[in-house]
Image (cartoon, rainbow, N blue to C red; front, side, top):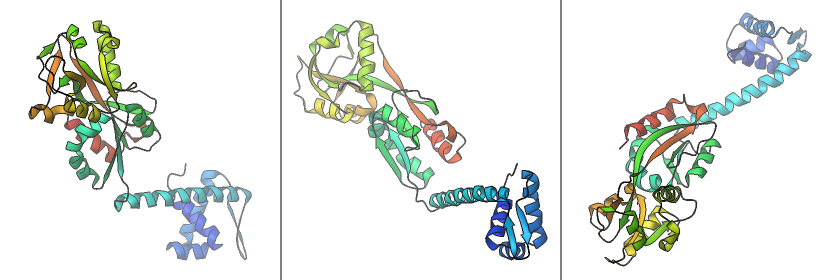
Length: 299
């Protein structure tokens, strides 16, 4: 098997120059070395590739086919070299896809650390987990950070941070809320299809709680919209407006006393965030440096 391109490159130059001696001068090697490399190719392929003539060289039928293949390989190598130059010259942007909670509340704290490794700009795309997984598979994103483990062939999934969902309001709540108390609240809910909504619905179903009986006053499409809706709702001690969200999304508001959290009595709403990337890039040291950094930043 031909393991390097040097001999094929010599072959291409001989064909282009139509002379062993001219190829020797252009490549900066001796003519016997050119002859030896062509002979090596012919021995490896068990076929005569070039016939010497008085007025130059002529390709055999097999040589014509090898010439076409060598040209394609040369083009691929040229394209690869151009891509490497883009990396060296910092022309490639590293693209991370992140689900809403991660992209809006977790990543902003660690993007500077990732940039330090990448030595270049990072483009952050925030979307639902399924869209992120698909874009990683299609090589549109270098890395995916998701809150829903949508498993697909061709991808590696690594458990990352642990997340906790909490009941919250702009009105002070008891530390623990019983399931029967959930019917007394006004609710802001995520839209259908949201992973958070799906997870909460499954927990409520297991606890025998009927979400259909909730007093839902609004459905919104993002964690940010949930937080803003609760912040702007009237403070009402008798009937607080509540929702359930990742604790990461309201950490600052909890600290400054603008929002209050509660937990379901006897139930912990916890989930894992995941890092996902292509299996074919598992030995990519550039990507693995970033994955290792993220794993060290577990909370």
